[in-house]
Length: 278
Image 1: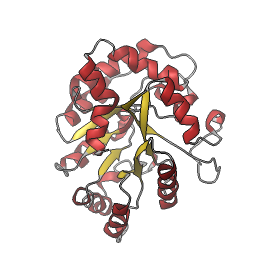
Image 2: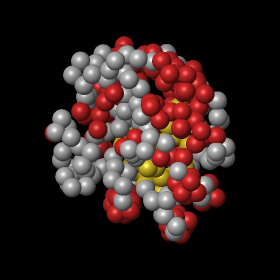
Image 3: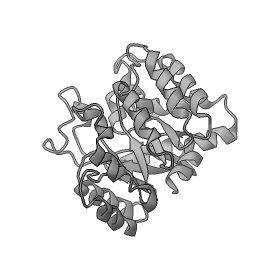
Image 4: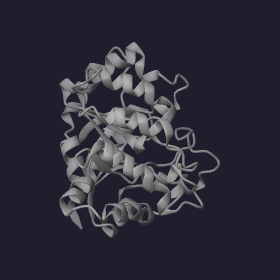
């Protein structure tokens, strides 16, 4: 186990069908509790020594749940939580979380919003504008159809530390690269934006994916962002819809095996430590 190697994107939950309404009938594999002891087994198998827990429910109760877990388990190095960025008291809420050193950033589930350019709402942008002065990062969770709006959003905050979750969920199942690649290159031109290589298998054919299905997407992201702004994340336990923890890890482990040890160490932990100030 390498304590400097980090899974920078995973979730914990105690399953509740009323809160986790995003889990469809096709997702029985994840409709149960997933807690730190479950993850620790996977981390140790893959030589990882820590994680960043990311919100899976848009409530401040979720923040409290994750913070409590982080106090009980030292390997939880950081948390990406949620606040209502549209609220008039958003700055007060951000200040409240400063007392919790493991709260490192926030996100909103933009890809589920009916308004596809939700991130450009003036009230939402006003809230996001408060992050930098409090030292917080922002995780961008979108689908590919929102990339044009995301580019405009990023341009508005040149000083804010952003990270794209799940390489913006391209059409891996259909093996379509297209405009996704064009926008990812444009977004990567902004040095304040990182990218999580995570959530790959859930965008592929859940029952029939092959390692080669991901190569073109990995090539584009690594070429665009370079080895200093890419970060490993498992998206566990969501990844279990399509692969075991070990199987999804082996996709990136095999891909990066041709890179130098220094580059591998950056991807598997160093960049996450730097981005989230872990």
